[in-house]
Length: 77
Image (cartoon, rainbow, N blue to C red; front, side):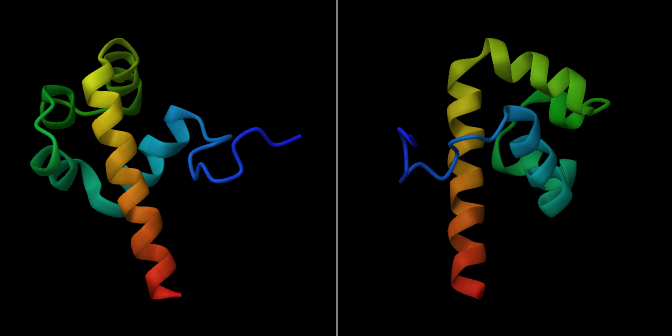
């Protein structure tokens, strides 16, 4: 049974979300959207995941950016 049928992030890992955002926007653009040092100073998925897992406000912002990307992609279809 699907407990969250209307949640576009249901079933996605933080790593998948971050990888999709990096693939779409790149590290520089992500840093402009949310000024997180690990996006600017020697960026990597591993260091970013470590920070995002510890910092709830940053994770919420990343999830918002991802939802916006999902909405943008739906409009393009």
